[in-house]
Image (cartoon, rainbow, N blue to C red; front, side, top):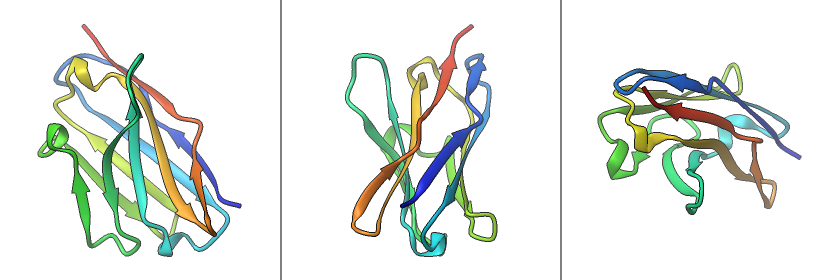
Amino acid sequence: QVQLVESGGGLVQPGGSLRLSCTASGGTFRTFLMRWYRQAAGKERELVALISGDGTSTNYRDTVKGRFTISRDNSKNAVYLQMNSLKPEDTAVYFCNTFALGNGFWGQGTQVTVSS
């Protein structure tokens, strides 16, 4: 089993920044491709960013490119999402995810609200 726990969400004004964290336990973290998803109220869950196990490869959805940065620290079993220049449309519950040991694993999510 892999447990994922997100933190760092909150209320921020448009143009502000937040840094989300996701810590993992169980399995061999450095081998996990890690993803951040988000789900806004009434909408489908969507992939925001992903990062390879060694952190050398990343990918982002177009709407967050240049504003969000995904990173990881394998010594801490952690993956991060630095979010800058936040917009109201970034408001959502953010989840980290990985597929490991033959199963998909999700955290409980952390709420990000961008509002003035």
